[in-house]
Structure formats: C-alpha cells, structure tokens
Image (cartoon, rainbow, N blue to C red; front, side, top):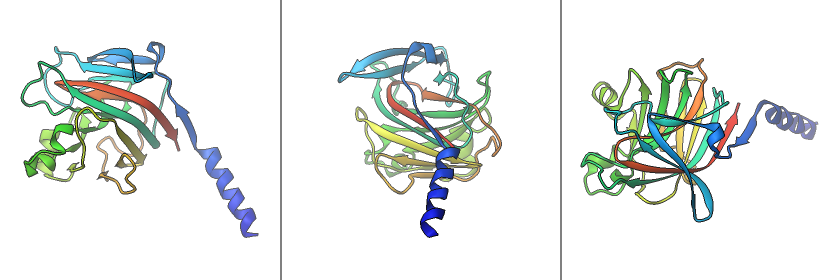
Length: 222
C-alpha cells in the first residue's frame, strides 16, 4: 500500500511540474535597455549582454527577455559570468542576475542579482552586499537598504570571470537564491513586493559596467 501511494505522489508531482531548457537564439530573445549578442565561449553558445549607456540610474529594466515564457511559481536556474568593461566606473561591481515576473510593457518586475567584486574584498561591509533583491519600479537597492538594512542583501563567496550557477526558487511571496552546489540558500526573500499572485516573463539582467554572459538557462514551472 505504501509503494502505491508513493508512486501516485511522484506521478502527481510530475504532472504539476514542467521543465524547459531554453535554447538561446535571437528569435526567442528580446533586448530591453541593453545590447545583446550570441557568442561561443569554450564551444558553448552564450548570450553576452551589456547595459545601454543611455539608461542612467540603478536597478532598471536593463535585460534580455525570454519570449513566450509566463512564469509564476517554480525554479529558474542559469549560469552567469561577469566581467568589467574597460570603461566601467569605480562604482561598478559586476552586477549580473535574473529578472522575473516581468509584465508585458516591462514596467514591473522582481530581480535578484550579484555583485561579484564584493565577494572577496577585504571590506566587510561590501562583502555583506554581495547579493541583492529589488523590485522595479518602487523598491531599488537604495530604498530597501535604508528601510530594511540587511534584509534584502547577503554575502556569498564569488568573483569576476568565473561561472556561477544561480538558482531561484519562487513560491508565492517567497524567493530563495541558491548559488552553485550549495544546499542552503544564500538569500531568502519572504515578501516579494509585487505580491503572491503575479506571473510574467524572465529576463537576463545586467547593470552599469558589466559585460555579462549567460548560459544553460532552465525553467521549471510549478
């Protein structure tokens, strides 16, 4: 009897979850506030993204959106690599991450990103700001830091010019970020600002001074 119940439970989970590995092609990608190219790196197809220099300010909709994806709850997994542009300002941190729940006009979305240069600095305060959650347009990093210092940021070991696996698990108003093969989340957000009943597109996100690379995007919907 226990074996039968177990089989039923596994079958129900399989029916309610669907995984999709995204093949990067210009036909299914749409740049917004950013420049995009598809390149080969170590014989692997990757997407290279640089923020449009006319986009001034932080935490803006500067991403490459995946077409024909409507994501609500589930898991987003992707490998990211960040380099600094030659003309990157002193404030550049290698900003790179994922936007999700993007509405059709790109006017609202949630995001989690990394600051790879902070991961191994000798400045402990900067280390504490290695990972960031934000919600466009109302909750950028500056507002969240002022109103709830330390709640939407955390530390993790990371660096420039290395592949980092980001896995974001979203369920209702909660999002958890896992890095590489870590079994424990590096950041937990318990109150996604857009609420628990929203869905939308997924975007590959960068900010000022970053030459960002993305590969192996997998989306699992619950």
